[in-house]
Image (cartoon, rainbow, N blue to C red; front, side):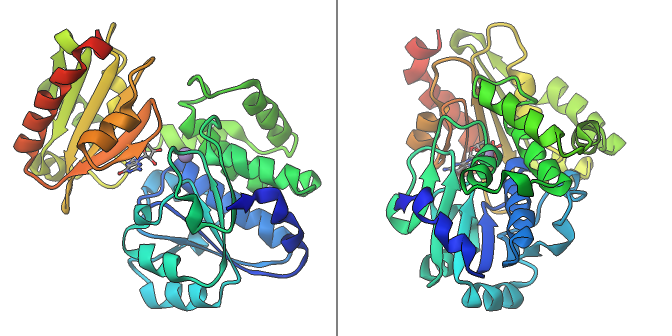
Amino acid sequence: MQNIEVFYPLLSSPQRVVITTHQKPDGDAMGSSLGLFHFLKCLNHTVTVISPTNWADFLDWMPGTDRVINFEKHKEKALAILDEATVLFCLDFNIFHRTKHLATYLANSNAIKVLIDHHQQPDSPSFDYGISDTAKSSTCEMVYDFIVGAGHENSLTQEIATCLYTGVMTDTGSFRFASTKASVHRMVARLKDTGFDHAEVHNHIYDNFLENRLRFIGFALLNRMQVLYEYNTALMYITRQDLHKYDIKTGDSEGLVNYLLTIKGIKFGAIVIDRDEERKWSFRSKGGFDVNQFARNHFEGGGHANASGGRSSSSIEDTVSHFKEVIKSYINQLQ
Ligand code: 5GP
Ligand code: MN
């Protein structure tokens, strides 16, 4: 993989661009994809964003979401566009299997492949150009760096700013995680110069849910949380009946894991949700406990040192038991 700067000159000739991201895109995945989408359109490239799957309703207001192709819903159309692409941008993931059923098509694409991502252990040989930096707060910050680095700071618009702000806000826990360096605040100041409305972004993302979601959170905190004080760990599990009873959709459970870390002394929070195809884990930690490594070691996952995810194909009861078993060997790191 060559450095992203070597790619910049290719921006001066018209390209047919496809931008893609990880399955079930979050705020950073969607924000970086759409921010780059609006930027490349300003430069007169032909651009399409293809998402491997659907996304949460709380992201559906972002400028350009109506033009994103959901691969699971419109496979033929997506593949026809991918087939014609000259450049493929891969954002907020670094290994093709994170795009689920889209993975083999991406791997086999003849387009020039460009990676922009901040997760650990990238599959660099799969990409022609790119930048992979785990110190970055978000992929949105990296797309901002890409725009500025390519000499197009003056092309920043309110649409681009709205999308990039969304992702940096969600990936930094609203600017509170340690990854929020001075450069993040400088970037936000520059984005604000476009005149975009940041209060509106917070409103869309955090204050736009239905009553059922808040009742579900109350239920889960009361009935589905276990605190393992010996390990400074809090665990939550959500059954399929719970999801059904409260009519929980993609995105409604996002952020639930963060409640676990609000308990004094808790260093490790883990939640597992019984989804249709698999039991999906989210891991969060404070301080030195590396949940990327934990997810890789025990739950076929990965991510960042303080935020990662994983999966299990066994039942919800068995995967919770497995968690309680493997945590035993981390007692020294967690105390
Ligand atoms: P979340 O818990 O919000 O789904 O994910 C937390 C972080 O871990 C995100 O940066 C996400 O991209 C990453 N992540 C989640 N699940 C997986 C996984 O199965 N494999 C890898 N490599 N990363 C994951
Ligand atoms: Mn991200």
